[in-house]
Length: 276
Image 1 (tube, one colour):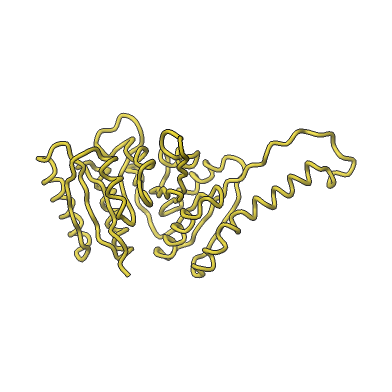
Image 2: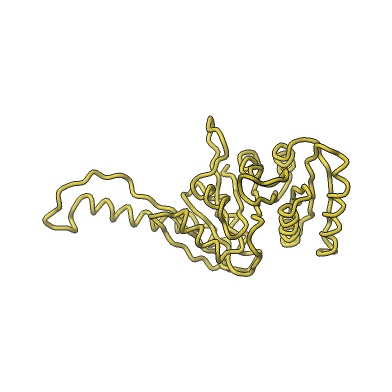
């Protein structure tokens, strides 16, 4: 069954071209149409940029339906509105600071706070190498939407799903050593916490494992430096997926430590999935 269309923002930059290529592949993978959007301040620029984008897509994916549109306004506002009807929204970025182009730098950062549905951020400084695995950064059961998206991606790509789960111990007050180490109350609580931490990924993913029995899942819990462990794992991934959490009254993009590290340094494209 055909899904909703995939939206990609372009602006004539090289990083936007890389995002265009990825978005076209995602549209083909989903059996969806591709909508190419240029948020413009100058209408005269739109024609050549959009024509070049459509030509590139047709050359690489002759059967893919493509729609191109120029929309007046800022890139964040335009793409947030376009994302309301999209299965996926894609942008390109080189990172943060000293970068030219409407869709470079902070647009992906700010768009994360307003996008409706998954946001694919394609970093422009890493080579492509697909067919390996999908990576999921899991912090809690609140990331169910991100987990569901990760299982769908692994199923569509026919690859393994690797889950890196972040776990931290609650603060405990030091106590004198017990004469019988195994019966120390603190150690008992820590052992219970260990078992709970290990159970979180299995509990969160149990329903999805049943729904996608063909997806091989490799999950592990990381208690020290989970964001950096996730970053290291992006070297072997086709895409990394994390959840974003929007809280009332909170200013700025809803990015935790996973998001901050990945948008700056990920070795593969990043998908940010808003929690509902």
